[in-house]
Length: 375
Image 1: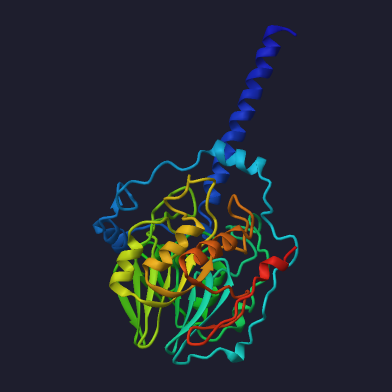
Image 2: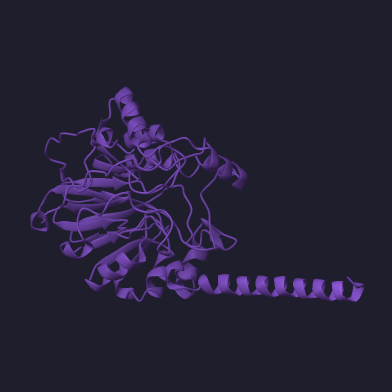
C-alpha cells in the first residue's frame, strides 16, 4: 500500500474513533440529565448544606475518622467472576398478600416488610412508609438488579400515607416512580438535606417535602420524626455525596421505632440509644456487605447489625436490606443466617416475618425460618 493511502486511511480511522468518542461522551452527558438521576443543590438548599459541618468541598462527608479506601474495581471484578455463592434464590420467595382493609391508623405499632429496606409502619395513629421501592429494578432504568419477589401489596392499594421516610438517595432506597405516585396521593416526604432537589425535579410540590439535618425533628399528629446519624454516602449519578444520609428515630405517645438505613458500625448507635431509646422495634440493615471488610465503614456486617440493635436499646430486631435484590458479594440468605447466630449468642430477640406478614409490637410473634424452604 502506498504511504499516502495508508496515512489517509489511518487519519480517517482516527477521526472516526474521535467522533465516536465525542458522540458517546455527549450521549452519556445527556443521559445524566434525565429525571431518574435527580436534581442538584441550589439556592436556599445549597446555603443550608454549606452551613452544615458535614459539608466540605462541595460534598457531604462522614464525621471523623475519615472513611478508609473501599475495595478496588479489580477486587470487585475478581469477586464477581470468582463467586461460588447462590446470590439469587433458587425458587420463589414466599410472599404474604396484604389485606388493605386490615390496615388502619390505630393506637399501636404494627408493620410489615415490603422487601429490601422498604417497610410499612403504623405507629400511634400515623401511617408511614420507609424507603418505599416498588419498582422491578433497583436502577434508573429497566435493567440491572431485579426483584426476587413482587411487593406484597400494590402501591395503589395502600391506605393514605401520612409520612414517607427516606434514608438516602440510592436507587434501592429512593424509587422515583413510587415517589411520584405517593406524592399524587398527598403523602409528605421526610428526607435528609439535599434529596428535596431530586423530589422537586420530579415535580413533587415543595409543600410536601421536609428536609432534615441530623438531630432535627418534626411532628406528625403527635408522632416525633427525628433525623439521627448514620455512616454512609449518597449519589444517583456521577456526582457523589451531594445529599445527606440519615437514620430515623420515630417516637409516638406509646411506642417508638428505629430505622438504621445503610450504615457502617460506629458510635452513633449508642448515642441514639442514650438520647432517644429504648425502642420497641428496630429495622436494621443486615445485608449487602463485603467483599471482606472493604466496605465495613459504610455497610456493616450482620454481627455488627445485632450489636447496633443492642446499642440503640431496642426490644425486637427486624433484619432488613436482604432477600430482595442481588447487590452484594454473599449468598442471598447469608445475612439472616449470620444475624440469627449472632443474636443467639447475644440473647437478642430477632423476628423474621415473611414478606407482607404483619408484625404487632404489642403481641407475641412466631417467626419461621422460611428461607430454608427456598431451595
